[in-house]
Image (cartoon, rainbow over all chains, first blue to last red; front, side):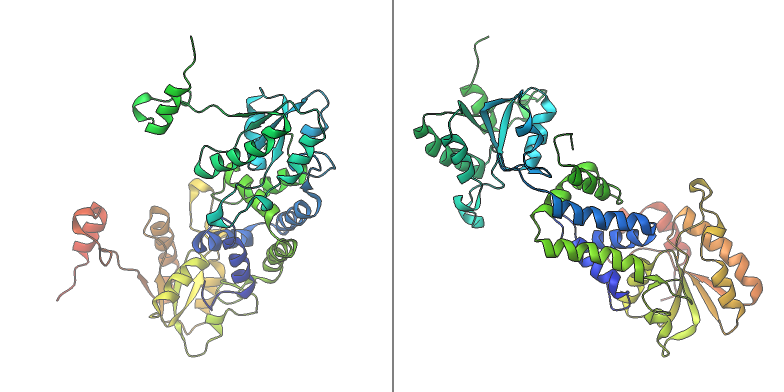
Length: 200
Length: 200
């Protein structure tokens, strides 16, 4: 946006452009769109931003985002609280919940160890995970970080911390995606699929 | 987002998803990002939304967006107020201003006539354009709507209204884009380039 644009619009554009994946052109388009929205809808948007930031915080048990003391998963007594699935972000919980098959609970790290990005173990929610395990009653910890270098490194690091506590540590299975085509699978995935083959 | 997500986050996600070009997945990503922003930055974002909507309105002369009575272009006395460039959106003004070559003023229609989308001439800022021309002192009106069916139809419609007022009406030239390659030009553009050829 140039000097002939109204200043409040320029400021709003810059705010949109700060969001991940939104460049200056998209930000300008969004800012202009806001101008065409009814005033009460813009007010609702501003209020939603403020509200989410003010009322949503970390679940005191699993570090998921919630607006109560415990997140709905931790609160549910019928779930298996002895199995903890360790994930990188709250979005990963949504993915598991969509399967409808997982009955255990979660722990959100809010990141992965990455010396290159200057993310060290202390920057993640690892202490609360260890405290949870040390309280006892945990049978299995499933490492459900992404199958990337950082995801694998974080899973490996945590595994070494947790195993001495006498708890079973597992990792998500890697293999061919369901519906995938062998021809298009990358070598590492194919190798993992071969290595982890099951008896029929 | 599912029922295990905090309600304020779901509401914020829905607000983001209302914006053009933002689907539910991107909206969820943006909402989670807001959670990681410092509280004062979120407050600044909310305030920017509110501020832009409350203080930005249409320039009383050219209908461009501005936070004062007249937009900076209309206010500038050194510009040629006898030449009006008619555009669809305020973004188009930014595009012309970037060329640094246009010294006239603008008029923003805020849309194009489109019976299919139920946009009729009365929904556009046409009355204020005609009033401006009727006040006198206008020498030329340049139709700078997009070279699309709707842009051409709107330009044609306006041209028929303005010509009887004794004002010259022109249309942007169509032809090969500078730096373009003949082989890849579509037929209509090539035909227009041939038709409007200039003497060297």
